[in-house]
Image 1 (cartoon, helix red, strand yellow):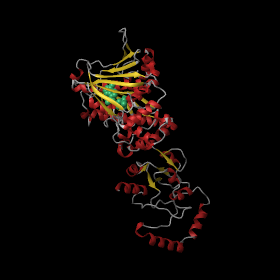
Image 2 (image 1 turned 90 degrees about the vertical axis):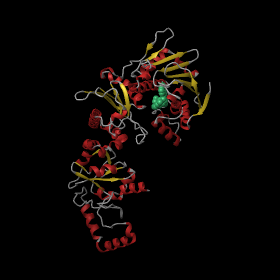
Image 3 (image 1 turned 45 degrees about the vertical axis):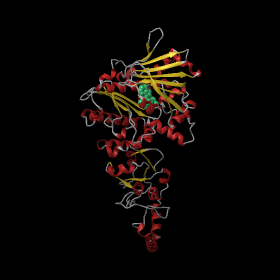
Length: 554
Ligand code: ADP
Ligand code: MG
């Protein structure tokens, strides 16, 4: 039989190098990754078979089988899932399909800190983790509905081969030729323990095949979200999160509930601890999966959660949707709209509780995901007020995060607006001359550094009837606001004395020098130590917005 030799994509070679040399001290996780893929493959076929039952070809009992050979030092993981054809093999096992992993490798390639094991440990490398324990990996696979089987083989050193193969039935068999150091992975006791630890939540049986014919199912084999909360340990919830979300952190919050009444569904939602690399990648797929009565339908659909909650992962299992629903039918489906609203409310109330009971934890969450949540301020009108109450900001008051309610508590007598300044860099903002007058009067100013701030501010406009006002705009009149500092009045007088005729002359000459580059030159009480500063017109664009617009036009 002919075999073709192919080279891995450069990023894969780089990834394999990391996998083999520095990654995870915990080698066990290769098995979790391979079982996870096998389970995904069964989910995919189960979905395809709704429309095309003939794909199951009389083999409808999905399972993952583990076969060991301690003489040849070989471990095989076999599934009867969807399988792969030649094009799938090249696409899936020759490149980096997962956009999160791709971004990660990219970041790693750019920095010289390729040895940063802590960072690396946070990311899943999926299939390629097999090369942590094996010096050769063979994949034999046949796609459901097709006749030709294929064999993929590699030693993980830059190249792989693909050729035709023989196989009964469909699915994928992955054979690991274990390195001498990892003979342990042919031991039953070892495999039993690993599956129990990492893959107990998998919805299909993971079966250890034994020479004496007494095959043993190693996991619980019921979908985790269908079990009752009291029967699920934190470890099981966390492992399911990692499997489901392709994540390597632990979740910050786990929300498991059953909605009853007009519509019925089970939600198992996770809020992550770490921000995924690709949160702003338009091609990123979310990791919230939709099931209908335990049958996987789709993943990451916009119909399930609004984009500003795209970091939420987990599972929603609906009782009310028809089993034969196609992905196309999800759009404008009224049941789904209700589920989406329900999920959004649930996450919001969880965040509200956390913001009150665990403010440190909430601040950390906000640090990682606040810039995404703020998109909801202009995209999700119904939830705007709740989001605004959750929002946290940096300010001139202290180095901690503050809520708008706390800002208002600290407002000065006579202060009518919530003042802010925006720019890229918090330290540069703190040094802005525009802040001097505010600092002198002890008026707090919010320091906004997220690009998204320029978008929600104009559409939100107010919080509790207080306008948001940029300090880089004209007008911001400080005279009405009482100062903290008793000596202030004296300073004011001094300033007044210095003005008049000489100041008018100065202003006139500046105007002549700058010509049409500026709109106006004014005397101002907003500066205390700097001689001058740039401000935007009250009706015109904020300074930063103007800069952003200019960048985009170019
Ligand atoms: P991920 O699971 O995050 O997509 P992996 O590296 O684990 O990344 O797997 C890459 C791809 O290879 C999968 O997305 C899938 O398309 C394919 N694949 C891996 N294992 C199997 C399998 N057992 N059956 C079918 N396809 C598989
Ligand atoms: Mg995987």
